[in-house]
Length: 229
Ligand code: FES
Image 1 (tube, rainbow, N blue to C red):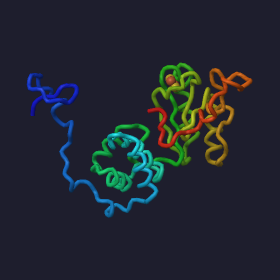
Image 2 (cartoon, rainbow, N blue to C red):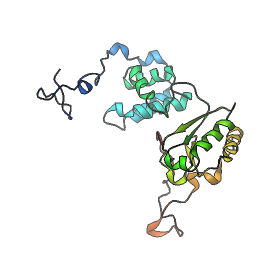
Image 3 (tube, rainbow, N blue to C red):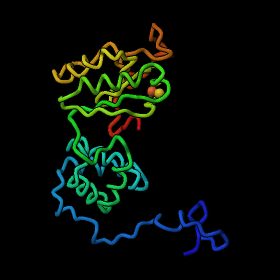
Image 4 (cartoon, rainbow, N blue to C red):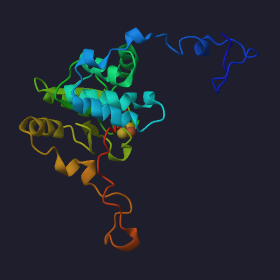
């Protein structure tokens, strides 16, 4: 096999680089791709994944949102769920497992119903991120919640912060961890005063009229969107 250049074009004059000439295109056979009738994929999941694939010129680009759809349905990326997605996308399960196991926000083992990521990167760490993580871990003992430290979640201006069920909260006091866990267990609104979605953004100065009015959809979640990680 001739080495390939950056555009993927075979060029015998380039030095051989094992990193680009081996393993880039995994060998697979059609037999390794499960058939839809073998995997019992729920119709809603199939339709959602097909809709995601239709957004991209290369269906591989839909791998992460498709796995996110699997995770939303089953709570984590179960082997059966991955096989179902693989059958819809015409990939092998191993193709999707390699993606799922790479990203921290995709879980290949069972996790709790609620997920909390506490940022411990530099801005949050300097403002007590480690203590906040410890407080969440202590408060979450025995609760149906998956708690983990995380690198920068991209909301350094509200450090120290945490993502709770994909919503951002901050700045948080360690003492608020127990309150958040209690509210999660009770199915209540979590720390409403600390929710990023409730905070005004730069430029949100009244009156919101005329040309400066912000579009109402700005804080609306986008289907398939994964924040952070
Ligand atoms: S360092 Fe915590 S959000 Fe950036």
